[in-house]
Length: 159
Image (cartoon, rainbow, N blue to C red; front, side, top):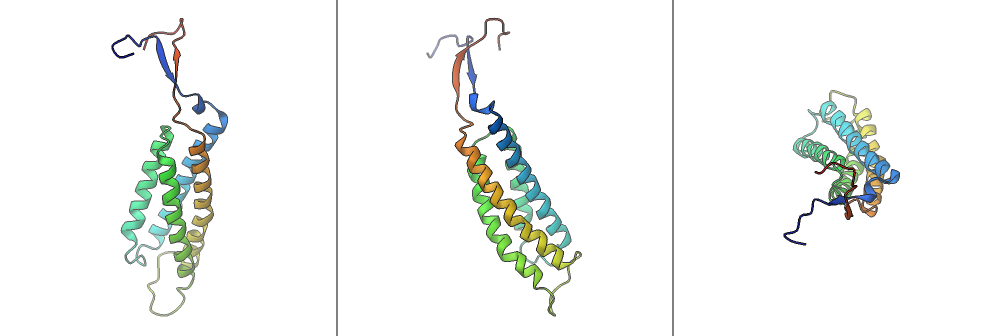
């Protein structure tokens, strides 16, 4: 159809109109933002005690915010990236959570917030990441990227 006038054809994304797709998109965005909020609390509360992890934590928060933005724009490619980064963050949280809780010995820098609370918040990241992985993979299965060409409605204004 190269060279022909395509003004009478509209690209439609039927899977994006489904309630389940909208709910999955909303869940992924909320889980990404909740993850950022939990990481921000750990970053702010434990800034002095985060020796080499400051850059990684700030980068993770930035990447999660970008992923939430693109997911809101129906970008299906962000879903497997969100799931993969969720797996990595889950592993980090599973290792770091007990370490925050074990800071009652001498020689450790005291964070601004109680280390037990920071350990709990870090451990809360684990179920959040499990949910993020599950919802992101569910969204990927919903095929948000499917495009269907259909004729323009006769009463609709031209694009």
